[in-house]
Image (cartoon, rainbow, N blue to C red; front, side, top):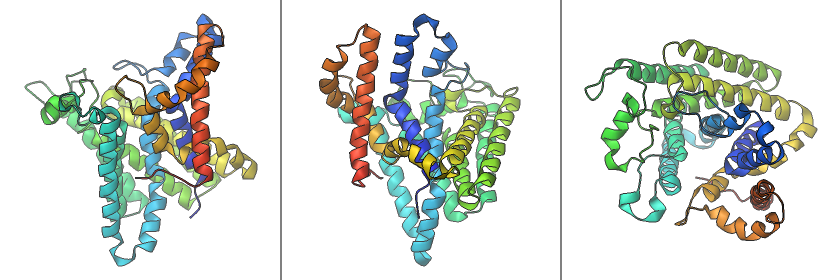
Length: 374
C-alpha cells in the first residue's frame, strides 16, 4: 500500500516546527522585525497561560496525537489482510509492544529516566505517553470494528465522558466543576495515582486519556475518509467536519472553559477542528493537485517519515540540559553562526543551521529507507 503524501507531510510539518523550525522562525522575526512585530504574533510561539487564548504552539502536541491516528486505518487494514484468522492476536501484540515502548521513551525524554536517579524521575508526563494512551484506545476500537460510525460513537463517548466527569464529579472534599490549576478532577487523580512521581506541572495525563483517545480517533476517522473517498469528496467531508468541531467548541465554551493543560472537551473540539482542517488542506494540496504539488511535499516527507527519531534527537536532554542534537550540531555551527551580527542574527543562524543539519541527516536516512519504528 502506497504512502499517503498528505499524512507524511503534515506529520513532517508538525515535527519540523517542534524540532527547531518554530524557534528559528521566532528568532527571525525578532531579528528582522524587532518591536515592530505585533505582540499577538510573538505570542503564537509560546503556550497560553491557564485559560488563556489558544496559540499556534498549543496546536503542536494535539496535532502530533491526531496525526498518529490518521495512519492507523491503513495499517490495520494491512494487518487484517495479511494476518489471517488470528490477525487480532498478532495485532494486539503489536499494539501492546508499541504502547510499552512509547511509554518508556516518554520517560526517557521528559521523565528523567536517563538520569538514573529515582528521586528525580516522573512517571507520566510526556507527549509520547499521551500518544500511547490515544493509540491504545483507537487500536481497540479498530480491532473491534473498522466502521466509521463505531469510531465516531466511541470518540463522542470519550469526549462526553470526560466532560461529565470534570463537570459533575466532586473530588478531595471539593465541589465538582472546578477548572483551576491544581484544583480540578483530572490533576487530582494524577496526584492520587502518581504521588511523588508527578512532574509538578498543571498538566494532567491519566483521566485525560479520554481526550487523547478522542483526538486519535479524530485522526483515524480522517484517515478512513481519505482511504475511502480520496479527492474533492474527502476534502469537502473533512472541511465540513473541521468546521463543525470548531463550532461545537465555541458553543461548549459557554459551559466548559478551553484549557489545554487538562485537555477539556472544549479544547479537544477546538484543537481537533484545526487538525481536521489542516488535514483537508494538505490532502487538497498534496494528494489532489498532481505530481508537481506532491514533489513540493518532499522536504516535509523526509521529516515525517522519521518523526520519532527527530523528536528523540531534539527532546532527549543530557546532564547539562542540552539535547542530543544540540551536542552534535553546536560544535559544527556555532563558529559560522557567530560571524553574524547582531546577536539576534547569530541566534537565528545557529537555530537555522542546526535544523538544516538535522534535515540532511533525515534525508540521508530517507534515501536509504532507514526509519525508526516502534
